[in-house]
Amino acid sequence: QFDWARRNAAFDVRLRAAVQSRDASYSGDDGHVTNGDEARFPTTLLGTFTKGLPHSLPLALPTDRSAFDAFVSGVNTGDLDTIKSIPLGPDPEGDNSFSSSAMTTGAKVRGWESMAAGLAFTLEAPDPQRVTMPPAPQIDSVELGYELSESYWMALCRDIAFTEFDNSDTVAEAAASMAAHAWVAEDGCDQLGELTPTQTAHRELEMKNGEGITQGTIFRGSLNGDNIGPYLSQFLLIGCDTLGSRFSKDDPESYLTGHIRFGAHRIDQRVRKAVPDRDYMTTWGAYIDVANGADVRGRESYVTAEGDNFNDEETHRFIHTPRDLATYVHYDALYQPYINACLLMLAMGIEYDAGLPFGDEDEVDKQTAFALFGGPHILSLLAEVVLKALKAVRFQKFAMHRRARPETVAGWIDCVQRPRTSDEQEGNEGQTVFKPIEKLCQYVDSELLQKVREHNVTQNNTQMDRDIARLYDYDPVDTVADCSAEQQEEQTEDEGQQQQQRGTYLLPMAYAEGSPMHPAYGAGHATVAGACTTILKAFFDTTQTLPYAFTSTEDGTKLTQIEVDEPLTVEGELNKLCSNISIGRNWAGVHWKSDYTESIKLGEEIAIGLLREQKNVYSEDFSMTIPLFD
Image 1 (tube, rainbow, N blue to C red):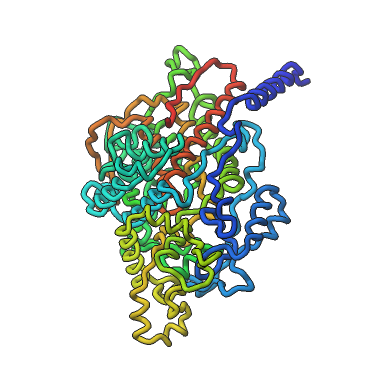
Image 2 (image 1 turned 180 degrees about the horizontal axis):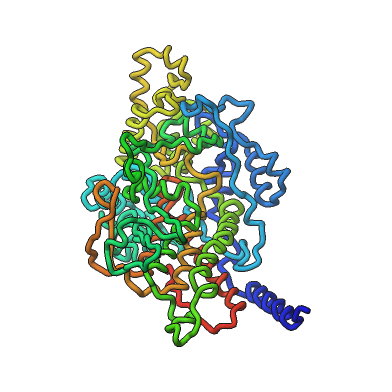
């Protein structure tokens, strides 16, 4: 017969954890605050996520506010029938059907991704609605101008090797441009007005604690360790491929394969090589199709082998350029990099946190960490915390902030820089609906915008989508454009020359489909990164140092050992891993800098709440020391 005392004790533990969770203090206890853009611009919805809803052809503005209201209703209720009734895709009664060169074989539409997940409860960790994020930068703010400028520069630097950042003229130009921006420049303070605590913190992070933005610090994260050593975390590069023998952590050769032992299998740190210098959504036709929900996922291009491809060296390499990092975070399982880091640290013999049990020799403890406080415990928690993080960030994304993606804001920039002749661009009393975007343009360097246009001219004149030249895509300014093969043949030579002069101010994207079908703020990858990194820092001694440092070779096919000025610590490299994965999405063009900055803290709060509640289930007395992101 089952022990009733044990049954009651189990109930008491669950009840105690539930009460503890209810009574704990969390960031969302005082409610949630947005930036107000949705209320400021109720018709145009400037600053607001509307991807997938019907948009007008020339301006990419929502065609019907009621469609957005239905979208919000679906988010708030989670009612499946309500969600199924939301308009998705081009307006069936309008003229904006899928029409870019990428659509010659047609396309289906993409549904929104887990839009009501924030309504779900969780049986441990804080409730998804108990944690929050501060308001995102407003659409016409100096800070957003800074973030958009960074997004443009990242697109222009996407194919420069990380190891060449210090020698790149383009990176140097980007650093000088960003350092002179009013958001961070000392003489730009007068334009900022009174800053909120969040804005002040963001600005100080960008100013690198007084160091400023330099060629060596630009595009890096803001955490302890991000500016030490190579740009990439060692946990994204090194291997520990051993089976049948102990890993020799003191031998640098042991790390060079990039193979991580995963049971009797191995994980290869190398990634598939995307075709360099090929960006997407650089024509208005491709952009408006994606804005209307066209599903062009999987249409990106990868390098193919021309020889025997020995050891996959023609088609795969270590993460070498920002495009490689963007490729990594395109298809990764969300906890993948953190499981890899855990496996590496276990193989390297990184010691556990000093406050955990079973830390003495076996002769003393007579047991070892495994099911409790060992590898399986940590690995299972990494997977467990992910769902908690995703529910919480989905609530922030869909139910609260509904922040527009960078690609969308760049689309509005294009409307201002290349005015349309449509009456739609004029609002009441002849005032343009893009006044806030005109203000935003003042905070983006005109020379940078010209570089983006030139970049897109090159893309549109040289790239093909589905065997159709981009220069024939629909364009609201150039009415000659047409995407069909039959009509291409009818174009005159003069018309073709006219097409070749066309450039846009759209954000060049690393993915054919652009951003996912959910709002920008917070970032799913960054929230999960913050949560998983916090779990790892809780279990391992973060003060330990890694014995060696490595970067990719000139072609990225191998690793090479390098000397670093400061030792690389476990904390620093885990923080860097968190930043690399989060900012990898920025390199793709799908997220903003503040998406990363605030989302990792959201994930950290969730992970700490989970660990706090789980402490109730153990009989062992223990503690964990976690160096926080702040």
